[in-house]
Length: 127
Image 1 (cartoon, rainbow, N blue to C red):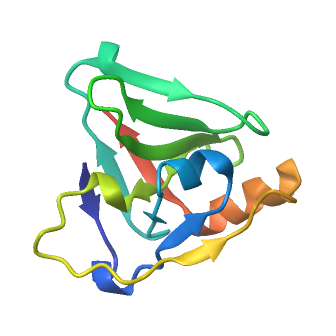
Image 2 (image 1 turned 30 degrees about the horizontal axis):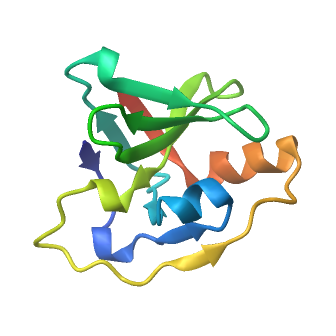
Image 3 (image 1 turned 90 degrees about the horizontal axis):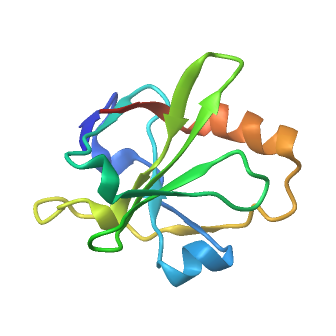
């Protein structure tokens, strides 16, 4: 994964969704709404797109190692793929990662979820 950030990584919010899928993966997620994320997939047969909940999001998981990499969705309003980056999937030996804040999204409607993500997530290129 490659980031193009509008601010230092240390200034990005780190969130820990509390749904059962994310808790089981110990997810810490971040995004820079003014940045971009490029996810390079060398062998597309090893990429799993898991879908659950409201059915608007693909959770990208490597079939080979089991690492959850990103959550992405197509933003119909802006005609672009947006998503977040799972911090645990990054090689961050040189970067200090702050503690995550618990995030509860279970009671969101589809509309409010899409609006929140449009404001918080970043443009994604899946190549």
